Image (cartoon, rainbow over all chains, first blue to last red; front, side, top):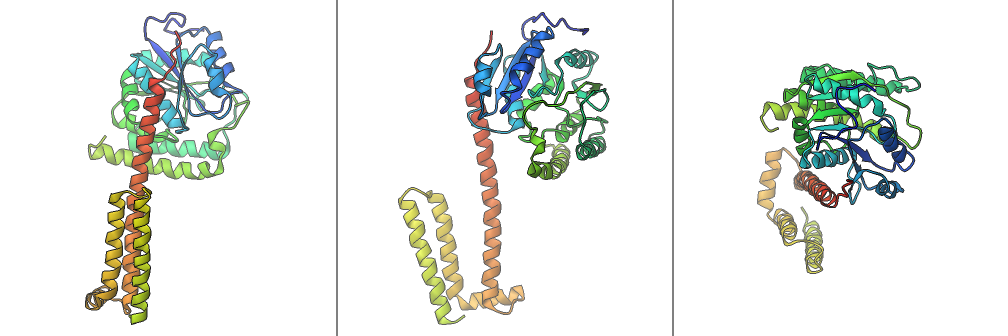
Length: 247
Length: 112
């Protein structure tokens, strides 16, 4: 695996990999083990978002930092807690990954390489890369296209895969997101707010994999209906806040 | 409005008053919310008996019957209350999220 950084060396607090976890007893061990099998020895911060299965028990047996929400707060809150911990502990770079196995750890060096080229935040894009066996549902693809266009219109940045949770960011971005991060569906509005704040956003191709166990939060029909309306509203409010100097 | 209608509304308002005071006594309602509901009950009784004022208000709204004015005022009040409680719920959500995150961060099990 080639990368600008030495994956096995951890000079202090260089990189933290944040994994939000909610009912991932069938995936979490494999995800952590795959990260380590790829020779990545950076600290892994897991945030259990009030799982009701054995996820928490499994996390305690893994070589990771475990932060456990006492109650379920939502995906965005779990990510934010992880980012807050990373910022408080002084990590220079934060990598966000899902714990369901869809994000492939061997892609992390590509994200970090783009950071090292000057970006403040890098999005791992499944639309730019080849992901054999991974298929984005038609409606979701339309949604991604729509929010990508919205992000371009409001934030001026063309990001193809605005809903990708596979990201790497510098400490400045992490500090910003530690303060304000949406509780649910932190997608387009985050990209728009970062673009409006003049952070340099880059996108690199990344392979994704199909989830083998469990279900995605997007599979709930109520959430699927709520998601686009919430994201459109949130995106315009982000713009309004920036214009009125409230952000 | 007939005397009978006025009496029914007044009795209902007074029953509500007893209910609210009982909730306060049992510590199921705070003083601040009790004051709000006492104000509402007072307003209902006032509008019911202050016929002149209600008639003026009815003319101002362009309504025909005073009861329509009372209904409109009630709807406006319910709308304001719903917005108020939405704001309260959102504030509580944020507080709970903040507290839960702090508890989680304070109890983090570091691996090293």
